[in-house]
Length: 442
Image 1 (cartoon, helix red, strand yellow):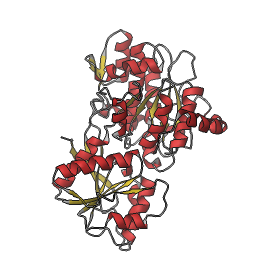
Image 2: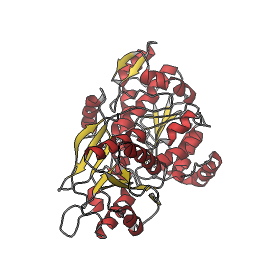
Image 3: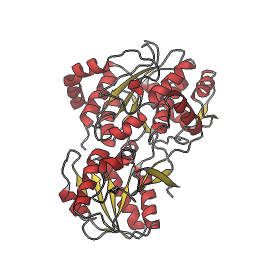
């Protein structure tokens, strides 16, 4: 995806203002409302967990509850209001309640740019949790940076962000709580090697996420002695495509041992179904990634003529969570929402936590203040804390902290990156996704 300029984003936002003001106007809601629960979000849904205060910290969320990544977005969207409610219950930030404005980015860069523009210029938030899709975050950060809004993504994993951060493009207003795909690609390449696959083909969604992952995987797998069957003719499909017969035929050509498919759920299910219907998947291992790890995905792909799930036996990787705060986060989620949090919910919680902790450390509710302190509270030499309220208390006393998150230690480096572990998952004969192992990139 080409980067969307601020001018274009403003134009999009102007056209969309009527829609956003109608759907996103600030209205207080009670904690744990249906609108904040995974699976029930609406386009451009808004929630504020406290009445807006001119003095108080205001943050936004820009996550996909509709579009190609809705199945994952709806699992994670509840984390941010849960964090805000928790913080407000223990006194807020800088002596005032925190206000949250939530926007659905629709898994679309244009909608994301418009939503980010609204958050930055109309709502005047200091920080934003988002986005999830790398292509949407690319659009959003081009708006966030000139407006001095701190953007912390819980799931945009493209290596492109590291490269741009190294060049100084983001001026410190970017971080993420999920590790870049250079690490996941390494983990998956090592897994493929361990499984004995020597010849692998690739097919990816043609955006920052897909192409970045593909390049990292190809480089790593070749270093491990493997062969990329279609290296000279990479298969990159249009994110807006609806038919995939040609792409499926090309991806499975050349008798690969396995096919690495870096997909989003909605379009990815159509691709895999097309490959099965052409008889291409038989005897070929399907390797998947985090973009499709959702409980609904095997059903989206469907069953074959024999009644078995098409995805049965597929394996994949996804950023895992092993942070010191994970147990307490899971307990809180169960108490407030019931059940267990979904994919990337811990990363979203940590992203919001870093925003509020950094604002308190800076003693100001601004994007500049957050950007100046976010790495200090995430990876500093201060007291280790897993509880956000404890962290806020220590910061109010003038002490320094090192926040240990639910997803991991969230040690944000100079490029806004963290290093994490990865869960290895598979699809059973019953269509259920199960985590079967963990891998750490080495």
